[in-house]
Length: 199
Length: 286
Image 1 (tube, rainbow over the protein chains, first blue to last red):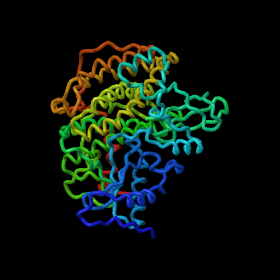
Image 2 (cartoon, helix red, strand yellow; image 1 turned 120 degrees about the vertical axis):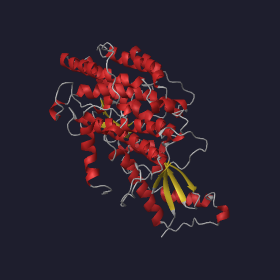
Image 3 (spheres, rainbow over the protein chains, first blue to last red; image 1 turned 60 degrees about the horizontal axis):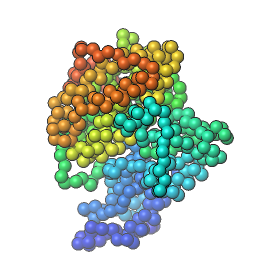
Image 4 (tube, chains in turn yellow, purple; image 1 turned 90 degrees about the vertical axis):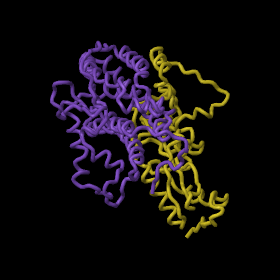
C-alpha cells in the first residue's frame, strides 16, 4: 500500500510540502479522463491544484470542462477512491473560476489526442510572434464585430486530419459524441474524425 | 464529496435569489424542452446536437440552483444515498418541488416545438420552431453572460464565464440552421418565417426589468436588460437578413410575463413530465 503521510502538526498546516505535493501528483497522474482514456486529468487541465484545507485534509481542486459534463462525477469519484486507497485524508473541490479553456491542455496531451484519432484544439496562446488575420464573409464579420458572438469559434479555420494530416477537411456536425467534440471528415483520405473544440 | 468553490472572495455582493432562479429556470426549461428531441430529431447529427445543448443548459441550471440553494441556507450538495432532512433546500428541491407560479423562466422557453394552433403532439414538432427559439435565446444569453462576467456576485461571475463559451456555440449552431432553413427550399423558408412570426413577440418580455432584475442591476450583480436591446437587435437583424427572412413588424400587444411567474398553459405539462418521478419517490437515488 502506497502510504502518504499528510498529517502535520497544527502549527504548520497551511501548505503541502514539496515532497507531499510531488507524491500526490505522482499518485494522481495515474488518473485518466473517463471519456478519453489516453490523456491524464492533469494533462487535460481539469486537475488544477493541490492544497491543504482548513481542517488539515488534502483538497484536490478540479474544474469542469463544460457545465454539464457528465464525466465530472466520475472524475471526482476516481480521485476520491485513489486518495482513500493511498490512505490520504482528502476531498475534491470543484472550482469554476477561471473557466476551463483548451489552452490549458499540455502539448503532450494534444499529441496523444492526435495519435488517438482526435484532432486536438488549436492553441491560440502558443502562436507567439505571429499575428493571424482571419478572413470571413463580410456579413459574418460585421456580426462578430458587434457582439463578439461568433469570434470565439473560427469555423473557417482548417482542422488538420489526425489520420493523414491533410488540411482539406469539412465539419459534418457541430456536436460529436461528447459536448467537447465536433464531427469532421477528411476530404483527402475520406476518414471521419472527432475534433476537440477550442474553447 | 464535491463541494462548490471554496475560494470565495470576502468582498462580494449577493445577487437576489429570485434573479438566480430566473437564470436557472430559463436554462432548465429550455434544456428540458430541447431534450424532447432526443431520439426524435430529423437527423442523427441534430439528435446529438440537441442532447449536447440540453446537457450544457441543464449543467448551467445546476450551477445556478446550487448557488441559489446555498444562498437560501440550504445544503448545496445533492443527496447521495441519504434522504433529505425536512426543510432542506437543494438544487433538486428547487428543480423538482416548485410549482408553475414559482418558476421565473421566460414564457418563450416553455412553448412547445410546434407552430401556433397546432396540437403539441410528437408528430407535430417543428424543427424550425426549435431553431428560431434557440437562436433568439442564445443571442440574448451571449450578451447577458458577457456582462455577468463582471457581476459583483463572484460566484455568478464564474458561472457566467463558463456559460458564455457554451452560449456562443449554441448561437453559432442555431444561427447556421436559421440561415440554412431560411435560405433553403420554399417549404423550409415558409416554416422558418412562420416560426419567427410566432416567437418574436415573446421576446418583448426580455426588455422590461422585473423587480428582481432591477434589484440585481442596482446592486451591480445583474445586467441592465434594456441596455442589451440594441446589440441583440443588430445580431438578430443581421442573421435574419442573411437567412433571407423578414423580421415581423413589432406589435403593441400583450407582453408575456413568465419571468414574473405568470405562465402559459404549457409550463404545467413540462413540469408534470419533469417532476413526476422525483415527486413520486422523494429522495430516491440510484
